[in-house]
Image (cartoon, rainbow, N blue to C red; front, side, top):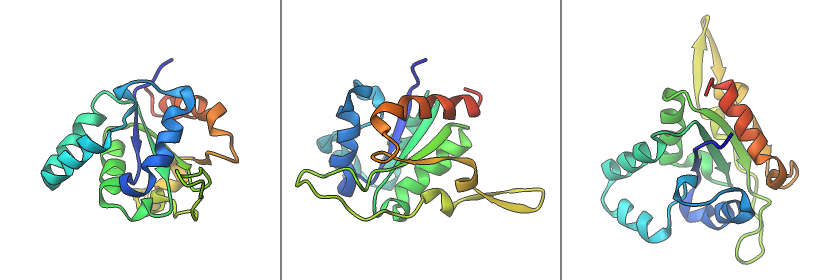
Length: 161
C-alpha cells in the first residue's frame, strides 16, 4: 500500500543526500515530503511560526515519518519539532542513517547521534526512549534502496495506520 511519508532531515547539510534517496526511484512528486531550496528559503525567512506551520501542513495526512540521520540531525531544532509532532499524530516512525551516502563531491560524513535518543515517554513510572520504540536503519549497509518501502510499511502497520 502506498503511504504518504514525511521526510525529516537537516536541509542545509543533508539535502543532497536526501535528494539521492528521493531520486532512488522510490518516491515521486511533492507528496514525498521534500521541499525545494527556493521554497525553503522563503519559508525560513518568514520566521519560526511560518516554519512550524509549514511542517504541520506537510505532516497533515501522513502516516509515517522517516528521519534521515546525518552528522548533525539530532541537534536541529526543527527535526526535534518534526519528531515531536509526528509522535503526537501517532505517525509510524523510523530513522535512516545517511552518513555513508555520498554528497555532490563524492564525500561521506560522520555518523550522527540517533535523534530518537533525545525523547522519552513514561510508562509505568519508567522512561522509555523513542529509540527503544522506533527502528533505525543504515541506507547503505541495510540496502535502503531495496528495503525502504518495507520499512515504511512496517512502521505504518505498527502505528495502526
